[in-house]
Length: 396
Image (cartoon, rainbow, N blue to C red; front, side, top):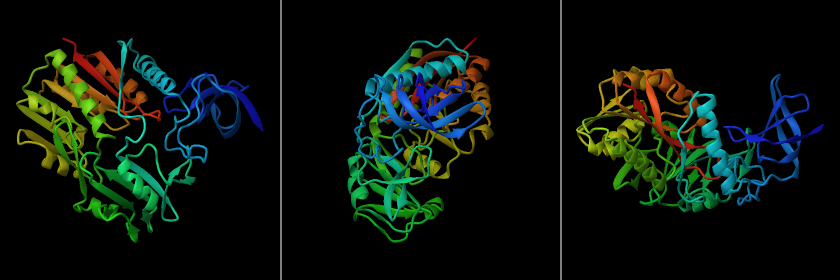
């Protein structure tokens, strides 16, 4: 039975938020603020429900026709294709502010917004499902696969891989390209048997990549050539990486943060150690991923000490600055305790989830740090994902 709901907000995860007649909150994918919708309830819980759109009765002012034709077919790769650019920006600003206030118990400074890369054709890494040996994306909150012949978010270097690539016996694949070098790599999960790709594409299966096979691309960003292995993380575009480094560098320069010791936590392939780290006499990089540590060893200079371990197992050392770029789950209490033990007067936190930022902010405040600056870098247009750079100053 269909139910009529009004959408009054967007949740941190990107879904629309409304209320059912019985008072329960209902989350609806593909909704816009002020939509009047007819929905079908797909999931029932005691305190909330989830639904899918049957019909848009009255469109909210932020709704638009999605620029990607695969949205109508059920693709869930980009959850905000149906929102105008202005609506996306407003929603991201609102999500970060709400998280800082409600989860962080803070009165945040004015939140800055920094435009990221192009709104289309920007992603240099994508993960796809495989359907009949062809690439596909999953539906929203679903394992249903939607075949994709081209992806308007993916970098143009992926076009012929989407159009002509044959993915053999794999269940999933990761496509990675170097936008400025032309390098191309496809990783098959769990194998790459019988793949057919353009001649210049390096193909490797995930198992061999995990065992240290020489499978990487090179990307250029911030004047540095970065080795990025099949299983290593890098930002969604080189332009985005440069803007991110610029935001961090600008805040540290404004704070006159010192130039002796930098600690780079969750260092990845060394983006911050190899850029901002050049200001410092000594840099300590801590990273748990074996492939990322191998890349960092290739990417970074001799003044950087690289520790292959989880952040919570590293023995903290005194520092002038800590830069932390944790996974989506955030720093959590263990990461904040590690930062606290460095006694660093200045900390930069890079968060890729608004909820995690709010929770980490409460922990940072309790650990003796004050929030000085917050900027949203819009690294993922057409999606609800956020990248937030926050600067923290230790209280005396």
